[in-house]
Image 1 (cartoon, one colour):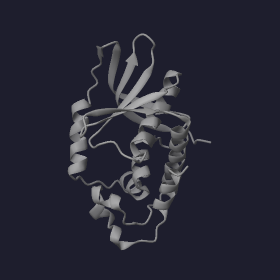
Image 2 (tube, one colour; image 1 turned 120 degrees about the vertical axis):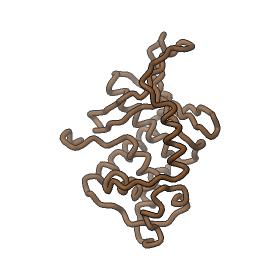
Image 3 (cartoon, rainbow, N blue to C red; image 1 turned 30 degrees about the vertical axis):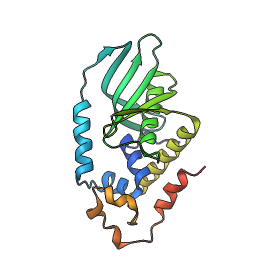
Length: 206
């Protein structure tokens, strides 16, 4: 059961946790942050789309920087864009990313969490959302299916447990460390005993 008195989990924390539980703890528990070229590019991409101006085009109303929340999952965050089909009222959240489509579900988990919030707020069902990648200039549709929903809900629970424990996992060096802006702060060479990465990998196994 969700503790309604607990501080809402930021939707962005789900993407951080799915990428690396230690990264999530460093950012959201220890308030650590450092910028590299990847985070700088991401910030620029979001500055370009971070506008509260709505527009209508091709039968769609597009709302930007939309605040969302779920009481059921105790989540809060902000959508880059929300597309609303004028005729049907169908909703499609759109998340902008600086890189390119990924094999892993890090970005899709974040997008699905946004959809869960919208479903609760607007009393609707969202079947498809979208990720737009700056590097490829391509929009990728994402099916908000039962498998992704279950994975997202598991990740929400994992992040909540991490926040409740207040514990930062020990550092484990993986290939993902190269792209992480917290690499030097994290000092992954200091430890190889933590098994949190194994847990994350297990989330993606059938």
